[in-house]
Image (cartoon, rainbow, N blue to C red; front, top):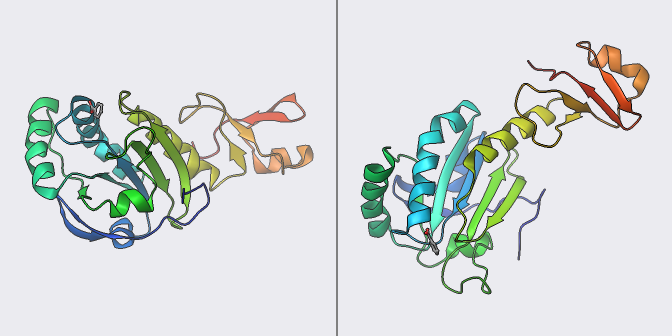
Length: 211
Ligand code: BEZ
C-alpha cells in the first residue's frame, strides 16, 4: 500500500553500510530523509549519493538524518562507496541500506512495476520528529534529484511547524512568508510585529518570523 502525507512512517530493522539499524532508533527525536536509488554502480545514482554526502552537514544543521536504500546487497554497497568517494570527492558516512529481499522497498512502495519490476525508483520520504511523513517525492531513474530542494523543504516544514505561516513558490530561507488563513487581520500586528502586507484578503505576507 502506498504511503501518504500524514501517515506514520513504518519502522524497520536493516543492515546498512554503517551497521545494523532500527529505523526509529536511528532517527531518534529528529527529522529523517529516507531516499531510494535504483542500482549500485550506475552513473546518476553515483552522483546522487555523492551529492547527499556533500550536503550531509547541511541536513545535520537542520537536525535531520539521511539514509539511502536500494535492493543491492551490502558487499556491493561497500564496494560502490569507494567509487562514490573517489569520483564525487567526498566521504560517504551516512548509512546505505542493503535491501536485497526488498523489505524496505515494499514497506515504502519504492518499486513501481510499470517503471521497473526489479529496482527501486528514486523515492524520497521526509519524516518528522513525530514519525509522520511530511514529504514524498518520486523521480524517474533517468533524472537525478535536486537535493538542495530537500533542504529548502525542511526549512519550510520546520518554520511552518512553529508559526502560523506557509511559504510561497520558490521561497528560500530568509524571504517573506504567507500569514496563515486562520489569523484574523486584526491579530496580525500582535502575532507578526515585523510588519505585514495585505496583497489580497487571502494573500497576506510578513517577514520570516524566526529571522
Ligand atoms: C543511473 O543511476 O544512472 C541509472 C540507474 C538505473 C537506471 C537508469 C539510470
